[in-house]
Image (cartoon, rainbow, N blue to C red; front, side, top):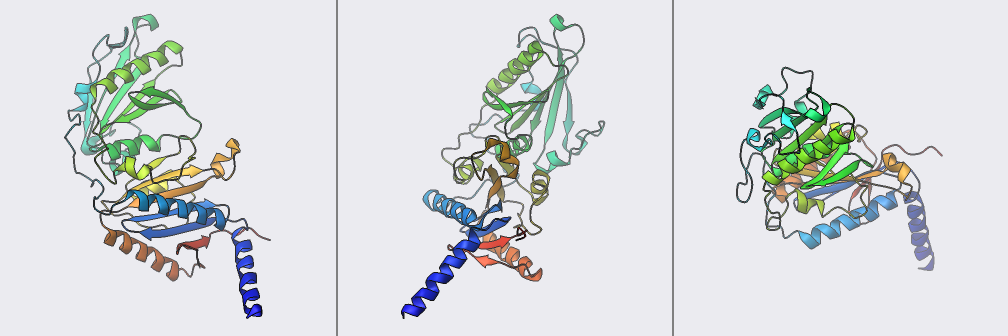
Length: 345
């Protein structure tokens, strides 16, 4: 008996030691309507600890009754629901900034057809229509200096998704109705079902201030729906992620194609979203060195309308691993563990 106990203890020590070895660990599990996991974890132990925390958050918050918002379902109650051109600020609403031309619009599949731009990402996030106008200010001459675009993305989830695609760690943010990101001559934010993008054609403090004033004017016109009464919308799923996220790293995605555009170094096999699923992810540093955020692990949560859909996607994911003969381990809570690229000894 003593010998058997000693062997078991030794086995546990060996397993624990293996799980502390550095590598590139993936962990994936399914519970209820959720598939959740970790990509790019330095050790299996860190991945398992993260999985335990997410699972606890799911069990605490989720009552298993409500479903996430479905693609194409518009929630009009308590939400601004007007064409984007009617949200464009009029002349002098922003201290001297006036329209330099009449507004123009795009509808559906016509987005950016006359520009050297790639609209595929907007379509992946449910784009409906866009309105834009340029602004000028006599203090800076007679040429347009600011382009303001407002996109109707159909739902708040889609609007936040396209906004989050453009965010990145260590960016500068401004509180403009809802939080806005300032980066590379652009100011971007989402509110309600709208995504707002403002471009300054030149770098100057006065132009930047004008961009912020225009953004505040637009934000004041938009009434966003309350999320307090809804389960499994993007805000409630976001609360399921562990704390200490890398600032500016939260992403929302509705398709696997969009996910692949966000992260270029994911494993070959990832769970597949359906048309009504919603995904949230964020970066987490392995240590407190802020310079290493690019090597941070990714924590993700996929929410499906029904547990059966999550079960089906999880089963297909496991089958794909078997077909590729991927070596897997089973973690302490039942999650799949994979060392994608073991560190050579």
